[in-house]
Length: 445
Figure (cartoon, rainbow, N blue to C red):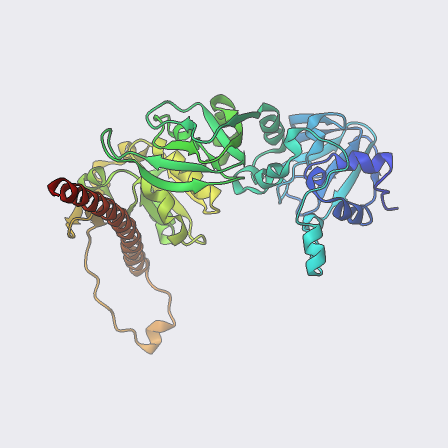
């Protein structure tokens, strides 16, 4: 039997996340596609490794989330945790076991996508309508947060704790939200408004504009992950409403369950599978010593190269001691790129495994750093050879060439960015020069 959207059960379902954020007509339609099911005490609603991709919500009663008989969390239908789908990751990461007689619903996630049959209906579903006022956590940004690759992979208990730990603040246009050089204290999500990310290469240098952020964007994690001072400043371009999470909660609830590590011994194996190895240290440190087949992309410029990376290829990240790698990996994960951190960074790599780079100066641009190696000549392949698998040594050589090719691509992107910055500086100086000439001409007269 389907659910009446106006009934007591319907209003209970309406408070679930993200059902609380969808338009009324869409919610009414969903109610015609679901029914309330029941289960007796001491039964499994689902087990670990199940692949049924429907979202399961607890409506009445209590359940236990457990893994290998270890209790993760007990959830009662009246608790905040019950607003979220139970153990939503597929395949299931844990078991869900009933502690009492329960009522629950199963929801196909595709129903949460608004139906767009014509232009009029598209306009109807272009806004959010909620039958009754909800708390701030039920706003549009909540849906975006839960769709993020980072948050989607978190345990349900973590999501609930994150929501409960969020604080809302408002800043005025022109206010400095975070300042380069200061210690990190919060992770931010923009609820509404626009912000500017900028950076000074040195204390007396001119500030460089790096990116503009808008509603649903996040910032502030770099310093929290690396433990280093803020490496950029963020300024409000308009009046801005922000949601923030303090450092301690960010570390325990987001960082620790999100980041994956490998040892340097596993690097060769991952490269052979097609992974990219990115060194996020500054060029001068990279030039002294680095791992073979690595690509030097300093962390502060990594954001500019995200679009040029193949999202199908996993990325290995290395830095001096592993701290900056954590921030880099988080950035990659947030952009749907699989990333692993080489544990301990360069400080944990035996000296005999390191190489030095050949540095070529091009005009006035930055140096290009590419790992040197043996030049591989093209090999003629006979018909009989083409049907055989390549030896491991040839595959490694091919991977080395691919890595150098990726390095060149990233270098080109860096040079383009630096060229644009220099052109902007030139135009600014040209305008100042013309203004000075005008002033001198007027003085002569």
